[in-house]
Amino acid sequence: MTGEHREYQSRLIVTGLNTEGKSTIVSDGPTADRLVADGYTRNHLWQATEVPTPVMAPNGPGGASVIPPPPAGYNYVITAFAPDSEWDYEGGYARILAESGAGDAVDPHDAPGMHTTDTVDIVTVISGEAVVLLDTGETTMRQGDTIVQRGTKHAWRNRTDKPCVVSAVHVSVVR
Image (cartoon, rainbow, N blue to C red; front, side, top):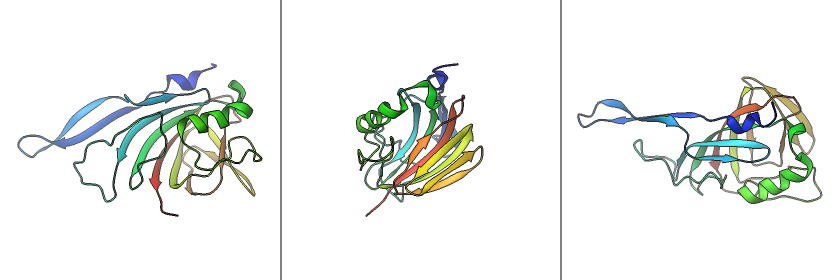
């Protein structure tokens, strides 16, 4: 079904302490902070503004339209990528990167979507398949596969006919 990735919404459950100091669920509901774009839907679940993070720190400043984490922090997201065939992958990827702030460095001479970020990204495929493009080649990731993307040039492709859902932690780095 075309546009199926747009319907993907995560549930976020947050624990804390009650007035007696006992562990409890303090919130439980659908992700409020989402970015729905042509090629993907990003559910922004949690953000910290510093590492180490105080255990009871609230969710960071958020802002689903901005992808990079705070300069000394991290983001945790779940993203559903549309199949490449469902959107203007060639022209749309660069526009999405520019609008979202995801690409710290984009070279117009590279393949569509190639970008470099100032983050270490730990990305796990939850369902579907993702192809990771690098300068020297590509590899296909399937359910349960994890990549540690260490601030190198890369792009994502979904060459299947179904959405690909990934979870990712983006940690700010120092270059």
